[in-house]
Image 1 (tube, rainbow, N blue to C red):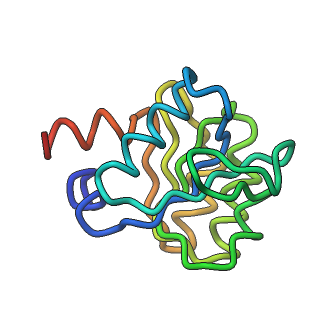
Image 2 (cartoon, rainbow, N blue to C red; image 1 turned 30 degrees about the vertical axis):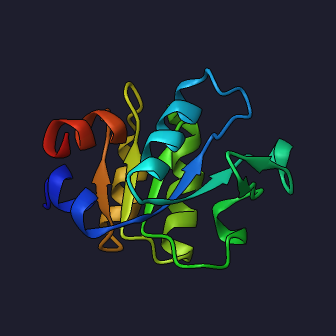
Length: 133
């Protein structure tokens, strides 16, 4: 399996599932940080579809994005990861990345059976800072 450093070096297009317009929330802080370092971040939040977060159009689901997505960065409860894993397979994502305290064995099995990398219980921002700042 590739480590988080390799993943963050190689893949720059991220669907951020669980994006929020509350700029104090962790998902927003992480999104803004990733944008600052050159990542293309697609916010995903069904209740905000069509609105904007940090200058990006919000999508209702990962499958609606219509542009290549390499990493699906998940800020949702662990039990929602299974459905997101199925979406990762549909769009040929490269990585399903579950944020801190988010883990799901079924989601892991779904993506790994489809040659998608699985990361759990890690923050993209913390991992990026560890290697690149």
